[in-house]
Length: 189
Image (tube, rainbow, N blue to C red; front, side):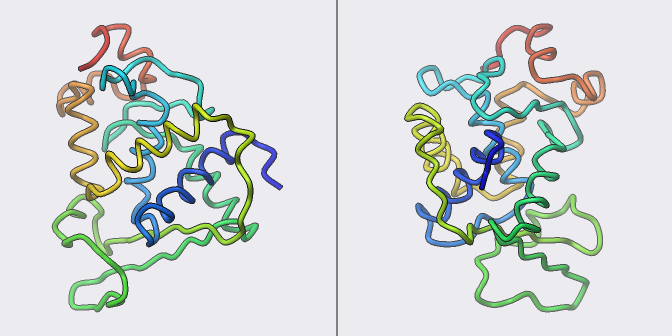
């Protein structure tokens, strides 16, 4: 059912998050940054490195740090096929969000504009992903446990800090792949 390796990795990340925290993965930004860490974070050194090839995604420097548009396309496809569930809530000034959702303070979504949009992801089908290999599944698990509690905004700041990405460096390196960026500055810390 999930022929694409990268979609299996994406599914596995969402599945692991739901398993570890017992709730939906809260936010596209968070999902982007977690997947980035699966691809670029070295478990032994704790540093950001060139692409590991584990996820199949290529990240570029964008407004909120590392971003891969293919992730959003794959999310849409998985949701359309009923493999994952994507809930979308739009918050307008004065409106109410569902009380059952564990939302971080709205101030953590300062960059989402009006209306503020909240995305929640959970798996719908129980698809086996052991074929990804122990290394990938271990990395997903460690990334989720290490960074999954962070709000989307805090995770964005942490990833940008690990990359040494200031607002000026984002502008100067806009659209470059993370590997290109790292080759110019040396490995990040």
